[in-house]
Length: 381
Ligand SMILES: Cc1cc2nc3c(=O)[nH]c(=O)nc-3n(C[C@H](O)[C@H](O)[C@H](O)COP(=O)(O)OP(=O)(O)OC[C@H]3O[C@@H](n4cnc5c(N)ncnc54)[C@H](O)[C@@H]3O)c2cc1C
Image 1: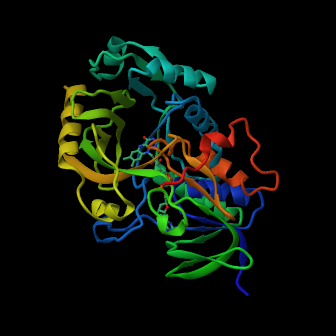
Image 2: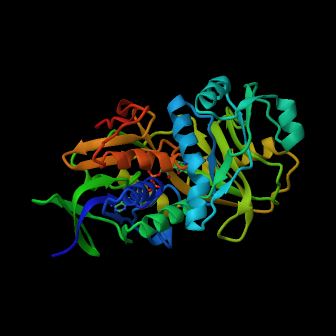
C-alpha cells in the first residue's frame, strides 16, 4: 500500500516550497511535487517558473498595506531560513522608488513597521549616481530592503521542508484523480495519494484545476547589462521611466549571473501589454523575449545611469501572473483542493508568508490571522 500523505503540494516554486516547509514543520505529512527549472528552456516543453533568476527586489514599501505586511512578515524570517538551511539568499542593499504613489507606499510601509521615507532626486543622484527626472516623489528604504536570490530561497525552503520530513518528487504532475481517501496525483514518475492538495503552480498547472482561476499571464522580458559591482547602487523601481514605451521599470543592482557575468538586471512592463493563455507561454519561454521591450529597457537604463560603461547585454523571457484582486489567491477552490497562486509580480519577497498562510488552511485550527481570508479569496474565470 503506497504512502498516503496529508497534503500534496503541487508546484515547487517560491510559494509551494514555503508552504511545504510550514506544513512539514507543523507536523503534517506532506509531499512536495515539482520539477527543477528546465535545464535548457529552448528545448523544454515546460512547465516553466517565474523564479529562474539570481535577483528579486525585496522591500516593505508595497502598493497596498496587505502587500507590505506579507513582505514584512516574510523578511523577518529570512535570517532564520538562511541560518537553518545554511543557504544565504538576501542582500540588504536598500531601495529607491520613484512613483506618483510613493507617499502611499511610505504609509503602507509604516503600517507594516518598515523604514521607507521620503527622499529627494538630488540626494539619490549624489548617493547612488541614479539620474531621476520624471517629476514623481521619491522614497528610500534602507536595510533590510534590497534583493533576494529566488533560486536559493527555493533551495533553502526545499531543504528545510525535507529536513522536517517532507517527501520531494522532482517532477511535474500531469493530472489528478479523486479517490475514496482524497486524491491521486499523477505524473510520468508514477503517482502518489494525498488526503488534500495545495496547488502552487504559478502561471502553469491549469490542467490540475476543475474550474479555471481568473489569472492574467503577462509576458515580460528582462535584460542584463554587464557592469562592475557597485556597492552604492540600490534596487530601483521607477514609474514612467525615461523610455515612454514602458510604464514602469525596476532593477536589481549588479551581481553575478550563471553565465559568469556581473550584471545589473532591468525589467518592466510595456504600456498596453496584454495577457496570454497558458498554452502560448511554452513558445514564449523557448524564445528571446520581446525586442521592443528589450530596446526600451536598454534605453531607460542608459538614461538613468548615463556615466556607466556597459560591456555586454543579454535578455530572457519570463512571466508575471496577475490576479483580479491584485493580491495572491490563497483559499479553497474545490473540495479538498486549495490554491496559492498569483504572485502579481510581487510575491518573491513575500513568498514565505504567502506559503505560511496557505499552510494554515490545512491545520486543525484553520486560518486565524489579522489579515482576513477575504483579501485572498480565489476568483474564478
Ligand atoms: C521578470 C520577473 C521579475 C520579478 N521581480 C520580482 C521582484 O523584484 N520582487 C518580487 O517580490 N517578485 C518579483 N517577481 C514575482 C515573483 O518572481 C513571483 O511572484 C513568484 O515567482 C511567484 O511564485 P510562485 O511560487 O507562485 O510561482 P513560481 O515561482 O513560478 O513557481 C511555480 C512552480 O510550479 C511549478 N509547476 C507548474 N506546473 C506544475 C505541474 N503541473 N506540476 C508540478 N509543478 C508545476 C513550476 O515548475 C514552478 O516551479 C518577478 C517576476 C518576474 C517574472
